[in-house]
Image 1: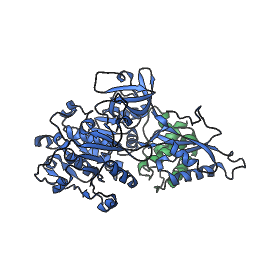
Image 2 (image 1 turned 60 degrees about the horizontal axis):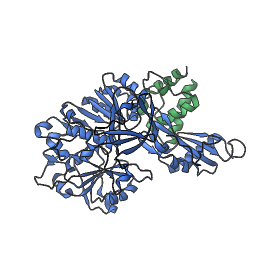
Image 3 (image 1 turned 180 degrees about the horizontal axis):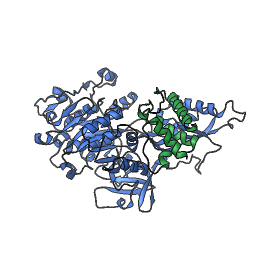
Image 4 (image 1 turned 180 degrees about the vertical axis):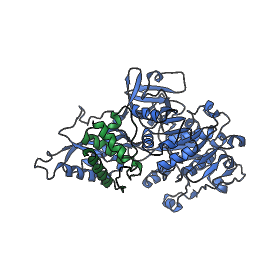
Length: 81
Length: 467
């Protein structure tokens, strides 16, 4: 739960900073349709690396890229185990 | 290499039989090459451009592609205006390039203050060509790259240098359907246009206004076989629900460092595709392609002489000499681009480990954020404007989405939260970010700011910048 709320809070913060209109953050939200661009996701991953101490994109050997918001959260939850 | 009978891009299309069934397509229209070779996107205006130095400032990529095919060999010089060129740079580009004609699908009023009277609008409706013999010119090609001072560098090429890496033997492939996330107004995208035109293939062009998922669906609908982009483009593809819409035979990455993670991910996702990564730059041309599935490149290709293309490593950076390297910068001595032996310093730092070289990043700490350059000094100067900041150091951190991202280490005049500064850490970071947002393009704003006690200052008194 902590990871999920950290992620959604950070997403809202970045959208606000970058003046992006954010889609409602439902589990099945397609990340590329969330209103965030590549730069926003890059910032998100960089900040999560600092706050959560993990970067699942480079930590995992078998990478399947997250497509939806719930994929993204699970990606971080699995990496933190 | 260009066949000897090809004097212009249009010659390269070949004869009518060779064009049958081939096309260039955009989001809303498909241009048959068979129709195009008998017609013109300029109608009867083509002679107006003959012999001129022409700026291609079209908004639409397909219109750009058609204009380039028609104008090569007809005009004296073609200068390609990239889509994100700030309007403030146009006057210097026009002056330095001696530009006396503009091809654009925008409102001609946008150019009224620039002193260029000859403005021609291309059309995606191909009109019958006027049968008039036009003089032939060995057209110069000028590509723009982002320069250190903000003003674009104008890199001079010819059709021969731009097509040097295209092997004649590959032109026999008849069913190649090209696609790329690159823009055709830049070196990477132009390479795909040339491969499509000079080979026997077709080309599905992307568009700046089109969402990635729609472009992937279009590529899939045309059964695109060869698809090219930067590692950042491909990471986005893998995050798209339409990633399965394509089933390429050949996937190529260039323009940024291709790391093992993205190569492995693509291999796992498209197991039937040949995944390769290449090194090319506007100035150096195409240097090499690696298709053994590993990041970096084999040390054996460095120092090999006797072929057209030679590589060397000097002071840690990769240098390239080949028929594909540029002729120079417009209005500057050739020495600004290449050394006395003709090698172009790419500014890309490499390190040898075992029998391979690996890329470390750009010289001088230049940060490549999804293909856009950031000079650390520019960002530091902005951060240092904040009254609480003593000094700052801006550097690159590897990022799985954009390749790299900007990070700032900041030394404050007083410890945060110590009572000597007036605000807590989070608010101070927010204030510094706001200063950056007011002054810098989005990709230059630090993603993360960290307060540190000290910075690594070298013996020269300068901030230590690693490659």
